[in-house]
Image (cartoon, rainbow, N blue to C red; front, side):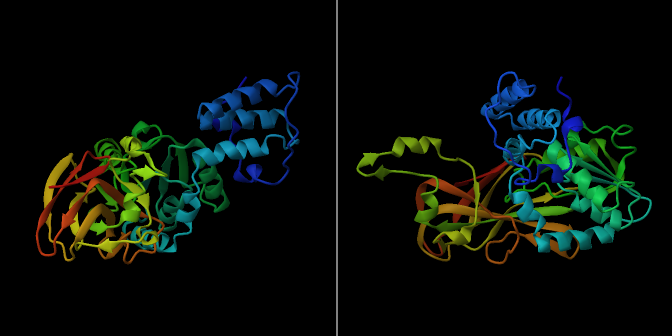
Length: 365
């Protein structure tokens, strides 16, 4: 019988990627763990990685001490927990900014809700700032399990409760003892919206927060500029290779943006930055479209639009992944155009920007 993920999840130290590894495979069909292993491998093949993690971990418990499943467990875990989690946690500028902002808004007597808590940094910052209670919400089961171990190791288990659930499944009076006084979150991708921040915040305001609750960050802006870069365009388009026409493959190109470091590619900036959208995280937001005028400062071909955000945590504390100044772990959002547009210095053109609360799309007018 397979137990639930809460029952099979173990402290992170139990899944050290090298300690105790034993590669005695394959198992004989008569082995007690054979069926568990087969089910886990089928789940891996179907990309059901969390289920595979459960099965491999259950097999490891049944086969205690052999280390036979260590690599399998770690392989399933890596498929669910991207390596950017570690780079993000090492982002000292981000951590310091959130620490300073949380110290300004959190204090004794407050219940804090942390949406998308990851390893639990914002929750522990809130507890350190004096919050009576913190509910940390993390949708990925094995990340939530790891966060519980981190919270325990730092002595905050009496004030921080880690819930393995999407925030939209939380209920006041159940996982959340009452409506929260403060919401902290960092569920933002390189263009703000790609981790479903707006729907999560809307649900929280409607169902989980007190009327006077503070939302941190309080707002965010999305900025853009046009660049000339055949190298960037080649990341999302293809033509002739060795005399063969590969242009039909461009039908599989990304319509919306992808994440990359602009500084890694040869490029030339054609326009000054413009603000596409401004989001108040304490108020309802609807899908939106607007046309923003830009005036090229250089002539050239616009192959792509580069986007970045500015997060206003509290007055005077901001974070940005602006390619010119940022040292943050976030990359930039790059959207290439199907056909490059000739731009002339001083001649205005329009950017038609739309968002559906989940992503952003920019077209040239």
